[in-house]
Image (tube, rainbow, N blue to C red; front, side, top):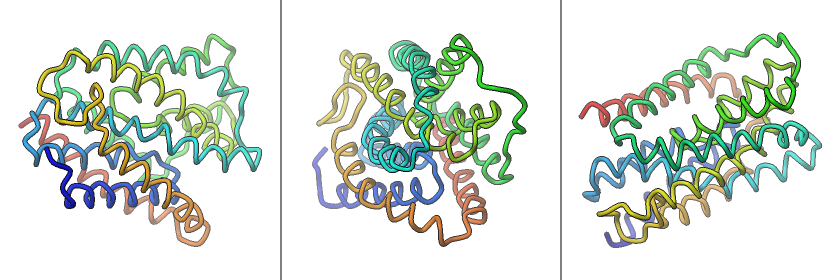
Length: 270
């Protein structure tokens, strides 16, 4: 697979769009990246089982870079609850390792695509309805945080997302203010991504027929181009969020997510 100009342009466009939407709507790029990287790899004759796995792993790897850029901005505003990051991180590493080293390698690409489609449909519905869980309780003790972190890390590892759609509702349910929950979720993106990426690299070492420039399940050209471009547009999206009707934009984006979920369902059933 040659790194032709068209491929670089496709990946750059995806990175620019992902970064902008992440800044604008406060979402990780995984739900947008995974279907498009799957499409790009499929068009270049990569095996059907590998396309989904590589798209999920590569999407997760880009979150390492976008998380660093995002959390710096949140930290300057004093919005990150570092006590929660410390409490959730051990469970996240545990759940991420279980997903990326064990379950991810055992599942077929079609099963992962089906799970991704269901997860994205659920997330899109939450976004479309703008549902916020009613805060009913306080943050649990260390055992509860490790358990919650394990679920967040595990689910993130299976869908290649930064965990915001699980961690933000969990924190707001525990009476954490929404701006703190979003900022803390951004900080959690780093341990989520790091734990899962290590697993994807190790699990992919023995896999045959990977395309050129692969590092385990991670496709390096996509990682480099998407991460470089998304870091450029994320601040623009964040600025635009203060000027645009975000609630309406979330509904429009939810409609796009339904289409992407339908494509991944087609890949799963095909």
